[in-house]
Image (cartoon, rainbow, N blue to C red; front, top):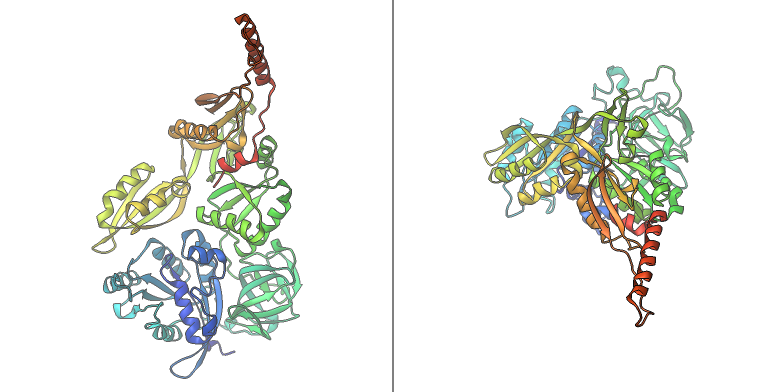
Length: 621
């Protein structure tokens, strides 16, 4: 195939700025999908994507386009997610293309995630085309948004395209610009430092990068690849360099957007390989596939391993379905490599005390990703989940000088076993907030409530400012920071963040005691100054849910053995004096005294069994 006739590009933007709608228009213009089959956000095939109206997974598609000059081009498009929790998806797409369309909603202007995605594309040395979308809206600020975008791209305003993906206005001209301005494959010096290597097309030199994958029960793992060197076809032997696994290709093809078999995939193309490998964990995103074990063959630059910033312990409601839960997560990890999970000793100890069964500790890049994964487990695999409260990872140093990582309250060292914490650190994030100037006062008030430190302020335009803020990651991810920013500014503000390291923290482990026994599954790590409020709120809630017993049930919140708050659930009482009639009052007192002693004895010996529905309600995420 003539490399000069191939264009690989993606669409990046803030969430809900029209990426998927623009992809629809491209599919329509190129005739890739028949008009009668083309629905809104056609590439967003997951039920959750359609329900929420956002892109969760990247979606590759191959289009054939005949330009105005009469030449035919192969256009490989990757539609990417816009939410910050799925930024890892975007980074993988950018590593496989030569160009990117950066899309901005004309009614909202530049948003925080717009800048984040732009910086990522610039790091990959991509050719970037600026596009202002939704110019058909009555509230569109077309020229103002065009000036904003040209300013951050450092290009002339005339080079920024004005389109309406909904109506199709100027979309054909944009497609022509993709053909004219985005480089063809083989021109990336960061991938191939030696020019003669770029166009080497022998089968023995085959080298491709896995940017995504999925599981097929008949064909095993289907690897989504970008071919950087050579060719591959059915029945070829392939070798995964990182995993050191050899296999035979069952099928190759491209995305149309469904999987469409082809004779072979050549250099510069984006497509798929049915690997025949049945174990999901053996195919990893970022691995390099080569044609054979050639000595001296080097792997392609892969992707940095994502570091989870949020952890949840999850348990199946039905303890017998633990194996199914683990298998489901293995399959989800194929399409979302930022997902991490493990069965830990701490999770097992919690289950023994609380009757939750075996559980897994799962790491996420944010709360939306956690919500999506839990929903997918329920809707795609039919597994109902109980999950703990979200928790970031702390670093602690004990008096003995031992360093440990704490991703849940169960990891907190036991002081009685010599685990006295000398100091503890928590992750901090740099947050970039873009906000209209009329809401500056509201934003300042929010920052005070979340231990945030304002580091810099600068004007983006005459009407918008950018705040550079540093704050504890737990506040940014697990709190209501995002919701407050959006609500107080009537939805006109946005933010993005990235982790900037660890700083000293003053946090404690809050224990919950029920009838004097510590319930590890309810323990949590909280700031010292909020320990009483958190404990009180928790006790008040569980008091309304936990069933009453034959004796008064004492609920307590404690830190380091010191009781901070207490609630009592009154005992269920039987009227033991009901059969009596008349007679001396001492008879009634005697029966009541016997009842009282019985309840005291029961209180000493009883062990409370907490029903699963109580865990479900208290640990609900």
